[in-house]
Image (cartoon, rainbow, N blue to C red; front, top):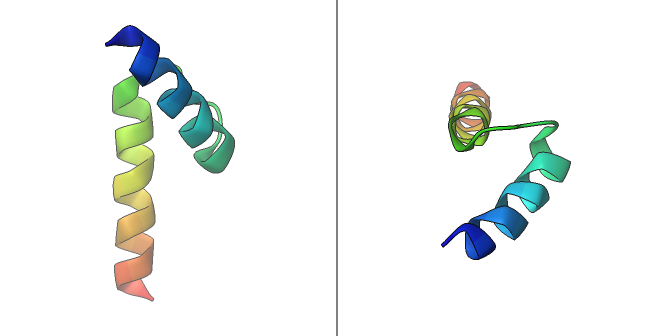
Length: 39
């Protein structure tokens, strides 16, 4: 499971920025969705 999560985290990290934890990238996605909804 870690092997699959690692590349996903890296891709998201490049997209959203430095995210050391899964919760971090999740928060980033939620923020992005909120911004999109606001627009």
